Every structure is written in structure tokens, then in C-alpha cells.
Image (tube, rainbow, N blue to C red; front, side, top):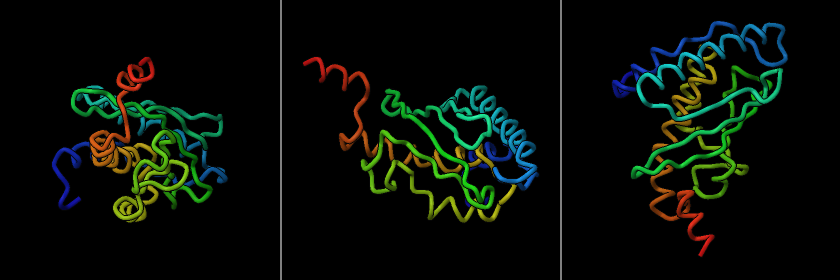
Length: 173
């Protein structure tokens, strides 16, 4: 955690680390899923208490292998909201989930086909170093949050992303 800003360090240290090394095909997956939920709940509660609520996410299937939700970023006092989804890879937790924002597909070079955000350079080595202690909450905190902070202002300022009120008023005209 050398070179990290104090806020990121503080946030990361408050997200519980996971102990069960199990993927969706392993017998201990239910235990791992419980740990994932505990970490997500802790991260969400911390964000809310710090007035930094920026996502909603839940398992889209009973097995906990597909996740969907919403994430948002405030830029110039306007809230930009995006659909969020990902699948837990078969090789999880050795492999991090590929977070997708389908509405932003092909709007930035820091994204792969299908709206998968690019996390290879900065996040994947960090994930590999901390496997299996990192989970979904860590992927959101250290992967999606910085990506949104870096990309959304550029997308908005370049006109690639419009605020929902601007899009609605231009559709009416």
C-alpha cells in the first residue's frame, strides 16, 4: 500500500479480507459467498456513513455467480448513473471478475468489447498479489471506483456521455 493516498488506505483497511479460497465450482463456495456478502455490506455501510454512496449491487442468481446493479459518479454536480454487471469467473478467486458497464461500451479506449472496463495494468497485479483475500468489494473499491473517477469526467467533457436531463431535453426538441 506504499504510494497510496491516505483515503484509499483507510477505506481498504476497513473492508474485511476474505479467508476462504473457493470458486463457484468448489464445495466451499457457499462459505466464500458469505464472506463476500459480509465484505460488501461492510463496504456499503462505510460508504454510506462517509456520504460516499456510489453503487448498488446484488447477486442476480442464487448461486452468486452473476451480479448486477447500478453505479454512479458525480461530475460538475450532476449524477451519471450506469448499469453494472459481471460474472464470477470459474477460476475465481485466482482471477478477478471482469466488471462491465454496458452503456459505455465503445465510448472509451480503456474498455474492452461488451463494456468490460480495462483493469489489466493497475488492478490485476494487485489482485494476484492479494488472492484469495480480495473479493468483490475490493474489486469495486480498487478497480471500478478509480476507473469511474478517471474516465467519466473525460467522457462527459468530450460529449460521449450526456446527463439524463440533457438527453431527455434534446429528445423532446
